[in-house]
Amino acid sequence: MKTVIKLVLIYFLMQIVGALFAGPFCLLYTYFAYGTFDMDKAGQIAVAPTMLLGFVFMGLYLWRKNYLTGDKHLYSPVSVPYLAWSLLAGMTSICIIGLLMSELTFLPNLLDQTFDILQSGWLGILCISVLGPVLEELLFRGAITKELLRRYSPAKAILFSGLIFGIFHLNPVQIIGACLIGFLLAWLYYKTRSLMACILIHIMNNGLSVYLSLKHPEMEDVTHLLSNPYVLVWAVVFILLLLLSLKQLNKYNISDTNTTTEL
Image (cartoon, rainbow, N blue to C red; front, side, top):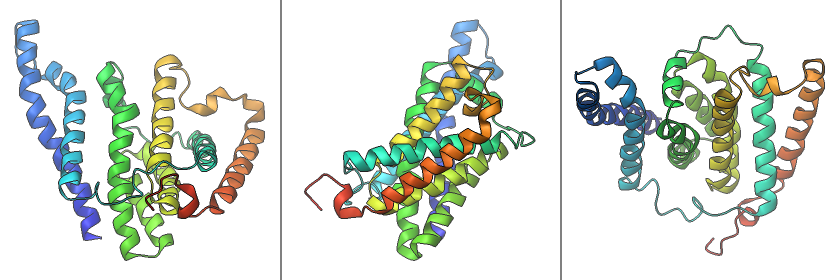
């Protein structure tokens, strides 16, 4: 567990390092753009570059420490049927979590302003929708879940992985949903040792959130796409589809989920 905690702390350290790199350049930019050093404006401009640099530094660290190399399964493409069932499990989980969170509106969103800043530019949108999911899967499934599976039973490793993933977000409104989707992603990684399905589901989750926020700001989450009189019906449908997809996925093992020959 010490290694897991260390990896999470290093991630936050890399974000701080990213801020130290991006901050001065963004402050200098405000001087040339507005004729004065504007700390508030520089802070807003630096949010996306800081996140990007943090991702790069963390990715380099994981690579240098051999977390991203030497595992034949990590980047293996999964079979089409397995991927289809995985995406169905991911989509239905996202909808179920949305229904759950719609009842927990009392939870504060401590990062609401930060997300608004990120979504105001293409770099921030790219970081949230694509780069963030890829890096977080490399870290949480490719490194952390792998480490947990070495030390604990699969059930405990998946439980710890999901809980750590949720707490990692440090935002009350995200913690519960992140824990739940984290359980699914950790289980999918355990079944295949591949990150492909995990990355796609994570991108789907974050991308949908960004899309709704930008194109349909009146919709707080995916549940607003559903007709209110039929929410319970939709909930039952999503749960049944999730159970069906999990049942199908459980039939596979690592030998028949991958399509590579180097196994």
